[in-house]
Picture 1: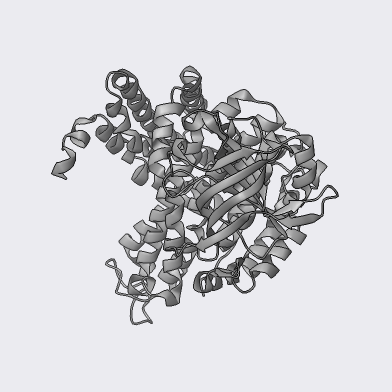
Picture 2: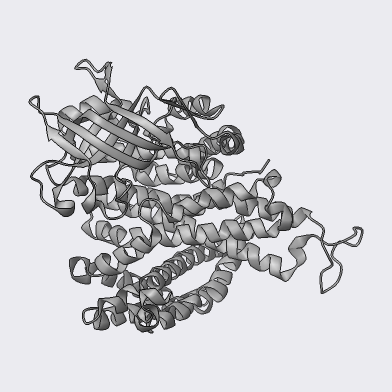
Length: 592
């Protein structure tokens, strides 16, 4: 069975050495000292490694099954879900008014990494529920909040998001699900939704579906879409469960991965629904959930690769194959361990440097969300809006690549099910597709986010890096290895953005043809920025004296690897962007 060790020391490093949570000045953060956060992370790590991780393979092998209209989850899932609920983990960063613990969002992300690494499919049940909580909390009436949020916060009731239809994926403007107004103020929802994660299961008493549908007279396209709360069981005035609603599971999808999560076809046959938010402005309300989900999927992208790397590292240290070209390292054995070979080291360093940079990026993004919410910081809100497609798209692309690298270290053993590496690859693949396929994320970044608020937020990002480089440019310990390459990469990103500005208005295809490269270019620059910040923090710890010098020296060496071996990809992406649309669009469709 694959191993999983919670990376608590690495999480603590980012939370305190890099982000300095307890001195950030944000409400509620003063309590987040090292001792307090370590206690939280230790408890979450224990639950992850001892309860959730052992169920990961079981979930993959058994999957979910549909029995008499009810979805049955794999053995042990319900008991584990009860343990997560009873431990208060589903309520960690939720509003205390509805039973939450009121901690900052960044702590939910930090613990969430471990839950995802231990069992990605399982964690989706509570992850989507948190998204439903956020949507109702932001857009619901006081009555709706009182009715649904306490049970959602506790995960006694779970939540879903219902967007996709058989004929309408990304293009939601053509969805057909209808919402007919009723005399009692409710709506009759009729239609079919597909690919609904956690659409039904046997781990909670009720499932609260958030469903996009069109009310007659709403107009064409997305402007006519509204969002509705459609519970599996109707809720009585006293909060008890009433009649079964007109929503059923038509089928379960048979998928490449995440077998432990129920991906459902949902049929709505005159189901009673309740308007959430404003009429015909359902996309605005749904995007509250979707944007949170995209940050969460970015986390899945790297967190799902963490155990793959851990297992590949253990295998590389244990498996004896060949001799080191510089002389035998294991003289008493028949061969040296794999880890002595430079190409194995390259693979492991690619994995390690990405994962640790991605962790910092994910937690920084969560910290921006806390700044926007707790301090009403519009600049932080704009910056995380800009970064969302980068976090989702780049981290999932590279996260999947990382699981493949980890699998490759096992050779043929990585391809057979016995070692469990194929599950990491199969589970990671969906993260590049759902919550907006990564090509759509790239289009969103270039087509919408760059120009948002007159380009204010991307300019603020460039200025932030410029100021950081100026602040640390004379620091001999980090200037050459971190600051100088960050400057070069940032210039590549700015040059690419200028190319889009100059060419995009005349020929939009010039911008869109380079959007995917731009997303990756942006991702590399952002991870380089994270590594530069981590390098400064590590060097400060070493300079001030520490009992953990090996940890900080390892951080610096890992960061240097990223800057020297990964960051130069920005030049490649820029060169591809500058070719424009011609090589992409030259062939006529019939010539393919």
